[in-house]
Amino acid sequence: MDNLSEALEKLKLASTDSATDSVESCLDCLLKALAKNHTEASMKIQEMGVLPLLPTLLNPQSSCTPKVANIIAEVAKNDSLQAQLINMGVIPTLVKLLGIHSHNTALTEMCLIAFGNLAELESSKEQFASTNIAEELVRLFQKQTEHEKKEMIFEVLAPLAENDVIKLQLVEAGLVECLLEVVAQTVDGEREEDIAQLKTASDLMVLLLLGDESMQKLFEGGKGSVFQRVLSWIPSHNHQLQLAGALAIANFARNDGNCIHMVDTGIVQKLLELLDRHVEEGNVTVQHAALSALRNLAIPVVNKSKMLSAGVADVVLKFLQSEMPPVQFKLLGTLRMLIDTQAEAADQLGTNGKLVERLVEWCEAKDHAGVMGESNRLLSALIRHSKSKEVVRTVIQGGGVKHLVTMATSEHMIMQNEALVALGLIAGLDLVAAEKDFVGASLVSVLHKLLSDERSAPEIKYNSMILICAVMGSEPLHKEVQSLAFIDVVSKLRAHENKTVSHQASLTEQRLTAQS
Image (cartoon, rainbow, N blue to C red; front, side, top):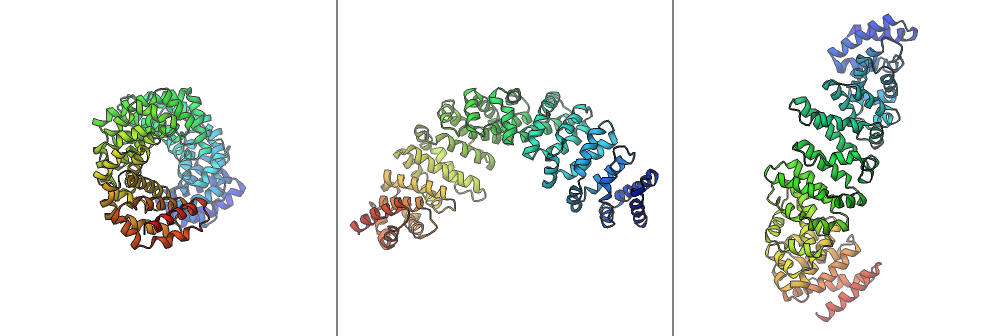
């Protein structure tokens, strides 16, 4: 390593008098040392104070510039030195060089390697966003014919496109058109590189749609040519394109206006046909993506009945046997969105014994908290939106009551509240049938805890008191209420700052006193 120290000393001197030959031989020595032992050499370059000299040697006119860029690219592999390189301002300088010397293959390659190594860091993205990197990369991409070169540019684009400002810059610079062209060229390709490029280009397309501004720009009120092209991916025979198309629709469906437009223009049918093809073929990622798109499209109230009429619930139910938690999770979310405020649909699904049985099973999926939470929420939603005695009976017979009681103790207030409202409806519609399960699940002591806990939100306290009044008609539950001294807890709540809570506390106290 001694000759490295020597070269670094020489470089410090030579950089001041710009003698190209001596600088060049020092740079060669540095590159050799980096190739031999990367970590040690890069730390030595830093220790001897040569790092800050590197940006000054990036001179557009100098023949040494590609080698300096090469050294920067190599040093940038060292995680501990990346932040320092960024702070020294190498990014804007290299972007400028890329613009001036885009014909110089060696130099552009070095710039791309350096960008690839630096682009993962958040701090670098802010610097990149203030340069014209988007235009330069798109221009460079348009000129490439070789697969390897395109891949190198893709490796820089992917981390940069995670930044919303850069997403929009890339869209404005025309990256989307390049990506669509790559897709068109590779969709029928059998070579490995075609398959790889198709995946990278379509994934990047989906990533660009994750930014609100870039997504809305490409949607263009549903008239955008990009939006139309992406739609044509869904009926494609290629799984990767089906996946990207469904994910793109899910991303376009991030606001009500877009969702309403898409449902009105028949996208639901395309997604249902896609799902139907995957009941048997069973590509899990495509199933998951198509269900995500349907779930998002079902959020606006005006879309729900249209989607139900189109038969969405029936197609979604075909995946009830899936053993894949991501698919189960999206299936549950889609059904829950669809039945929100839709009494008839909630009634139909809530009396479907097979569905309720599967929900009860998933309510016990301890390894998959998301599936467990969504199952509970759907079980509650079926009761809340149908308000039907038949649905309540189906849930009681399926063994769902104990899960709703457990859900009332969830750490998420919204879930607690949904559970309490559903339990209130069960008590109101068929207390006799639910009595045994209420006792078995210790409902009364759960309510006592919720009312005694100062952290319980006002709506939780309110709905707990409503439920106490509702279960008083059952003898065993009434006895439990008396044995737990509810009157003390309730009378304290008469002084609650929330008027609805304090009023309900007075009513509940009267009821408890009258029936003691």
